[in-house]
Image (cartoon, rainbow, N blue to C red; front, side):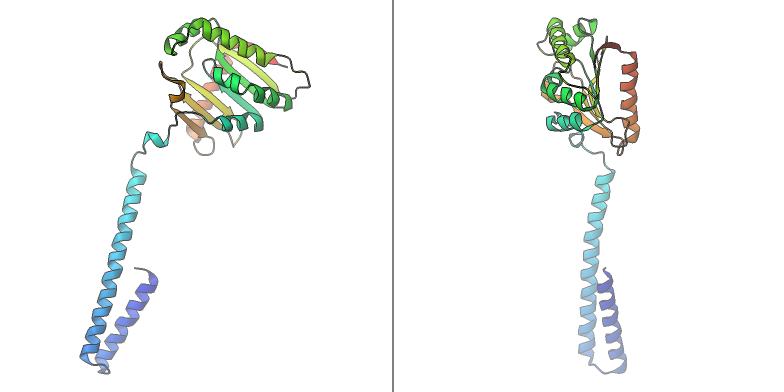
Length: 243
């Protein structure tokens, strides 16, 4: 019952009680007043019950395990990735060959490096046994095809720029197949964000479970995924850099 309802009901009850005791009102009036007060109390109790049911439902929803559909997406946001590359101080890109990323965002990567962004790219080593394994998991792709496309994309990124470069591009390779794709912006800052795309087996590229963690909201798992990349980076083989 709201405070106003409580005060009104209390005052009405006192008034009818006084009138009944002093005999200044007929029994019919007092009885009618009491019935009105009881009706108000009943109405308020029903409203409290409805509010209580809503609260219990909300608490139940909070305690239940959320649907995975609310956590995973099927694709990453291309416009968001462009903003991450262009507006961050440091960017990490990690995956099998990052074929779509290295083609779609090549311009943003080169511009970002020129103006001062530090970009780290970590991919599989072209021609390695990892490529053979990846080809069996990819859909309608051969190891040779994966390797040649990756080498071509890396060569384009490593082409010396025509103007001054304030940032740095580092590329390293691994001899094993990564479990996921990683896209991170300013990973060491308080505003750091990491987008993860889980690797799949012979599935369409656009149906890969994708999720994001931030340092502010997911500190524990953010540090876990950040440390995983750093360990891989330290164990990887340098491929090339700009400048």
